Image 1 (cartoon, one colour):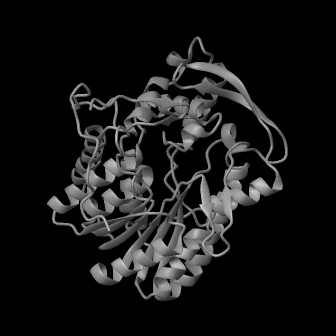
Image 2: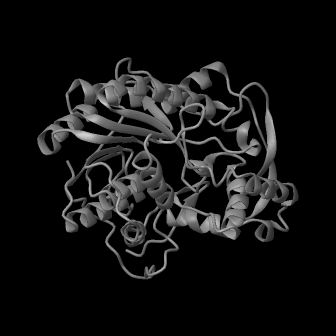
Image 3: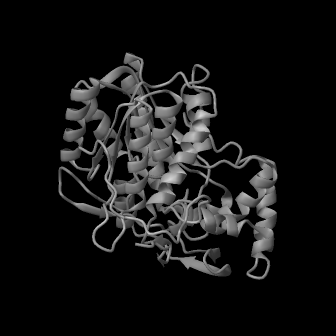
Length: 396
């Protein structure tokens, strides 16, 4: 079939296998072009099929030479429906890892469940013995608690009062004003349950209890802070409350792992185009302005550049790993430079529908959005007939 992008709001409902494979190949090529990393040898990535999780798996495998297990929830093609982008990404990764002589396995299912944790532990025990790196990069709108059975849903809302600011429809370039009503206490509770640190803690507890977490193991989860422009709807909103919980979990895990030489971190990363960030009011417009500034200053990084810098300069670079006053690793340092933020603020004040393509990199934002799903990628013939059914090697 000939696969074209079909969108519904901030979601693309189709994905292109050849385009996704090319995007994965480019990330691998980037890592191979850089100096090797003296890092992990057996890595588990929970949430491994897109974004920072996928980039982490690529850096571990092709930068540090690690064998990897990826856990993720993605769907194969069915009839006229394509597979999800994460499915195609993972198929491409598994093929490349096999060709490079790396052991790699994929487990597809609900990472929040006890069943998937147990299945992963059995695979580690059988194939790896132990893992020395655990990356937690799960992004989901819902979570069913494995013990209580309660299903939680996250929301993207401010806390305390209505928030009003600019936003953009990145498909049309229309700049409008959006108002977001504040979250209820229960919405805050549910968002923390989905996006906070409880499941990360459960993974480490399960791995440690089963004896498959190596002495000196590193575990890392990902967070974001961002500028004042986005704080009300992000860092000071429901998501921010969940990230506070995630960061508190890192401190607890670090205390627990450190006597055995282990370490636990939250890495605060740069704002990037993701399926998740596209859904947050205000954030796409901020990212479009940020991209323009950072590209002009030659500071722009995508997921793979961020994760290579995290692994090579922070997690497995200087000892001890440099952290901020709250114990967080900061690879958002270039984004948060004062000269970058001052210029972004200046552009933000001036941006309108009429000048948005001049004052921001909205076209770059839009292209990156479609590239998440394998579209608008150089070297891919989108008029060619392709089979949407792609197998994932080493799928368990």
